[in-house]
Amino acid sequence: MRHLIKDKEHLFRMAALFVAGIFMFVILRAVMVPKGFGTLGHYRPGALEDNAKKTPVFAGKPACLECHTDMVEKQKGSKHAAINCEACHGAQGVHATDPEKKPIRPDPKAVCLVCHTANVAKPKGFPQIDPKTHMEGGPCNECHAPHHPEKGPEKPAVQEAKK
Amino acid sequence: MSEAKVDRRDFLSSGGRFLLLTSAAAAAYEHVLAGAPEKAPNYKTTEHWWAMTIDIDRCIGCGNCVRACKTENDVPIESSFFRTWVERYHVEGTEMERPEVDSPNGGYDGFREKYKAGEGSKDFFVPKLCNHCAHSPCVQVCPVGATFVSPDGVVMVDKAYCLGCRYCVLACPYGCRFIDPRTETVDKCSLCYHRITKGLTTACCETCPTGARKLGDLKNPNDPIHEFLKNHKVHVLKPQMATGAKVFYHALDGSVR
Image (cartoon, rainbow over all chains, first blue to last red; front, side):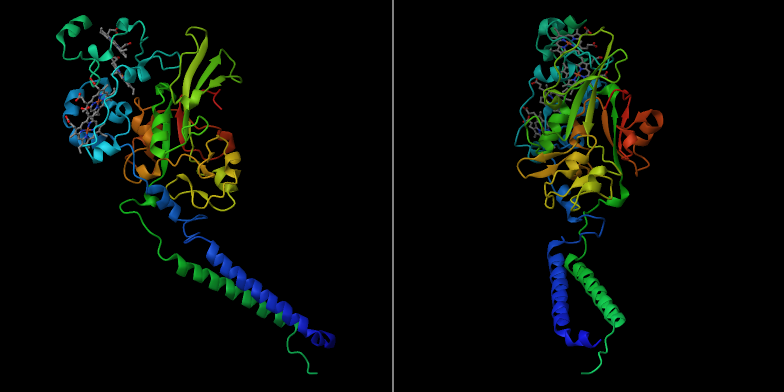
């Protein structure tokens, strides 16, 4: 015991060092661990809000139908009725919040081919056409109304051709 | 010189008490700093458990989902960054082990005809995305807790906290993660968290014309996903990895990796 007490000087120094170390640890930890970390799990709960705060770019079909109420009637009975508007019209979140910003109309030929161009990997039951040979490759909306393709467009002559 | 009052036992016990108290004080201080956790209105994370169903028999490979995802989530347009992408499989006869797979620009521009019908082969599209695993390997390897499973079952990235160490990119068995070159942090499908918390579906499901992919809430008893899972034989990718994947594929071929 004697020699231990004689050398107590260095013990105090070491203890001081320990205390300083622990103090530093506590401070650094408080500064570096993000707010609320661990309250929900091993993560920062604020990340949930970070991920949720972005504004949607696609408005969703219900939003479109709020204003374009005639569309339900127009598409009635069509196989296209189940397709959401923005599948063809692209993201219209901006237009839906500010109708002044008019969307560009989709090119009625290019847009159809995105889905209907024949491909062996497509499910066999899906209606597919070869754009080069199907009706001499005319503009699709001459014979198919985009919103109701089974029905011809307004032009009666084409309706005849369809029969 | 007087006899010392402190023996080893005393020293250890008081030292131990000191350590215990400081750590308790640190924990308490942390709570003071944290304040009350903020809450989103009307959306309760504990009331949802998100999943997705993908019907291979309906996917036409139009690429709407890939384009919509990039638009919605501001994903870099270059052809190596995808949160979702579509693969085309070409399996000849019994060559289950060696399918021919391609995904030109992730399916962003659609698929040009490459194979001919009637060659005794099988062709189909497989859309892929983060499987939002309940026991995700990517979450387990993150050294800082910057990726995690949210209470509503979405595997999420905390971009403000990610170091960009790439452990999770390597750990994901499905190849669903990439490093965003603009921020040098990891990026992946967030299941459009900013949409699903507002009552919308994901951008990919919104623009899918055939209903091949559908978002579902497993905690909502009225969600059509329950009907789908009841009436279809489904499969997840790499079930042997026991990741608890929550993207359920119907009509998935055995050749799909």
